[in-house]
Image 1 (tube, rainbow, N blue to C red):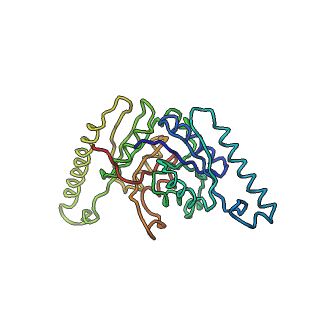
Image 2 (cartoon, rainbow, N blue to C red):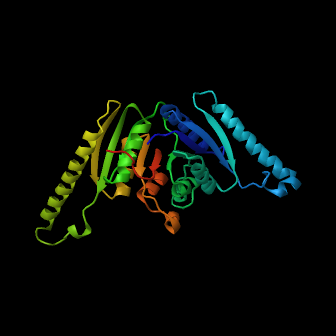
Amino acid sequence: MPIKTIIVGTDFSVEANAAVEQAMNVARHCGAEIVLVHATTMPGAPEFPEAKTDPDLTKAFKEEHAKLIALREQHGGQGVDISQVMVHDLAEIGIPDAAEELGADLVVVGTHGLTGIKRVLLGSVAERVVRMTETSVLVARPTPNSAAGGYKKILVPTDFSDIAHHALHVAMAVAADGASIELFHSWTLPATASGRGIPGAKEAGDKLRAQIASDADAKIANVLATHISANVRLSFRQSEHTPTHGVQLRLEEGDFDLCVMGSHGRRGLRRFLLGSVAETTVRYAPCSVLVVHGKYAGND
């Protein structure tokens, strides 16, 4: 997936600034342009007649607009074409709409690092942007390397589907020269395979376990052979866990700076329901997460 236009949502917070920094590095690496987008519902823009009679609203709107210009100027002259847009809507609506209107290839947003019970509560702007945006979304968390020159260590969870294949291509596009990309497959035995107390059940379960692992190795062998690259190192690991739990464990133990994973697009009411592996990973991952939407359009 060529990345030519990157939308970066900003609310001028520390987390949003981290998103801008990572977007700048991705843009330099991929030769893309950046559009900074600030969403506001403040009725201080010319579209709102009440702004003419409320100087406080007009002043506040102008202050936000000035911050956006200052942010653009701060990152100007660094080898990336950068512009800015104010949109008049909630961030989770305005940012996806701007991405569609501008034909963005990638949306980048920051996330507030909530802990404890707050992490269990639904509703962060980042999660809603992931849910509502048609194109791929990078939820940026600060990393030691800040993606300078591309990401150095990337995890790509896979279920061997087309969308997982697409995610691998995106990972390779944002990877630094010499980066390591680990394809990771997590699986569990079918519930019917437990067979507790049934003679021979354990042996049958072990045989099935070995067959699942062998099938995964066979599937990945073709992927690795197809994507031999001088610029990145590909490897494969699998584990016997549910996908959600397995991905989280691997991210916590692997010291990755990016996780790239596919998410099957949803429409209507289902877009407002959480629960996919990708959305759970966005919430709990210790590193940045790039959620890839859509299907791979290549030939391999």
